[in-house]
Image (cartoon, rainbow, N blue to C red; front, side):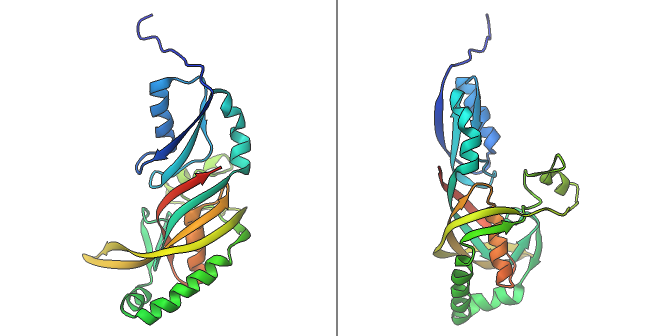
Length: 230
């Protein structure tokens, strides 16, 4: 009987405030280590760089996983960083392009930034409703049985079919600055803080990229925090 693992007959859920640096599976493995549930799952993956609400299902509650993942509404605080593109569509990826002229003008010219800021507001609102979103290459979505991220890590990019997602609401909640280093120089990037309520399967980093595309401007996502997963 020594070292025998006791399986606990626990049904219910645990709401975790996930920290940066942990995958959703990391969180599950920690919980399994301490309480050994007979079944365990979650209602929606959070990337390692993201923080916030991660709902863990235990025992018979896992029977509702498919329903919750299909029908749930999610709410996020996110950072829309202007003037930069990355291969992962968020700030953790490799930089693929910078709009250096635009970056310089919006930093140095208050009027120019004010005009751009109001454009961001108008264009962000245009995404409310249903829209076709192409999933990022650096994602767990599968194409022909293979995860896109595994293909991307081999230096390949393939055509992806868009998925219909719904943006229920999007609002601008503030302005900040995200500093990056390039060629030994510190570049402060103007960053718009947004709040998004959306359907399951929505990639907020792709939404940030798509907002930038409508501005004819590179953009990517900075920090991301999930506030709600219902």
